[in-house]
Amino acid sequence: VEAFNSMASEVGKSRRRLERSTIELERKHVEVEGRRRYIETILERITTGVVSVDAVGVVTTMNSAAARLLSLDRAVVGQTARAIFSRPDLQPLGELVAGAGRPQAEPPAQEVAIARDGQEVHLAAVATALVGDGGAEGVVLVFDDVTPLIRAQKVAAWREVARRLAHEIKNPLTPIQLSAERMRRHFADAPA
Image (tube, rainbow, N blue to C red; front, top):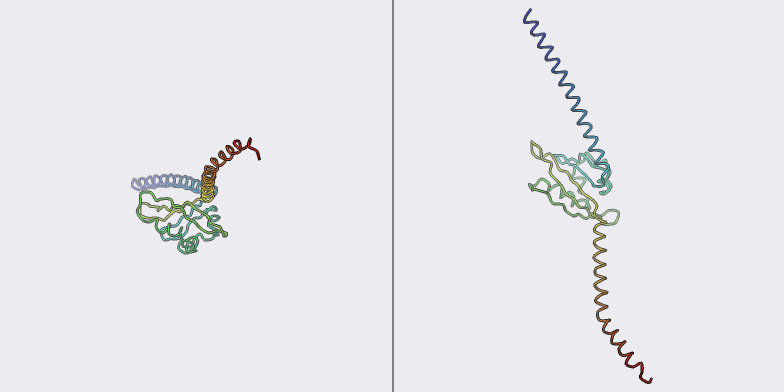
């Protein structure tokens, strides 16, 4: 009887521990789910394109900015990155994703030019390897449209060229103008 009571007590303790563990697990699940929704909301609201690729090369996420900047349908999620980035205009991004597994301290951002709707779009892109306890877990490709910045730099450069050109044209004209004024004053009193 004593052994049965002891066993029943142990079963009760185990049940209570199991219930506490279940409650804790449910709480953690709710917390993780909240974080997931938070991150998804942020990814959908930012203007930076984000594409994640898992360890076997399958695209697992693509935010709306990435789909817009790359002119892709979000239905490509689940396809291989190699197939998606094999399009001629997206090949530079595919090379970035493929090269992300190389060991580097900090992957450098690169400017990539792609053609979209007949116009050249400049993207500042960086591919970062996701490394976990078990090794490489995939790659995250992050890129932003810097075309307006490139255009502004070109306009500023052309303005500077025009300013210098105007200055160089004006330099020889100033002595000519002064000489013409001096000659006009000198010959103003002369009979015609």
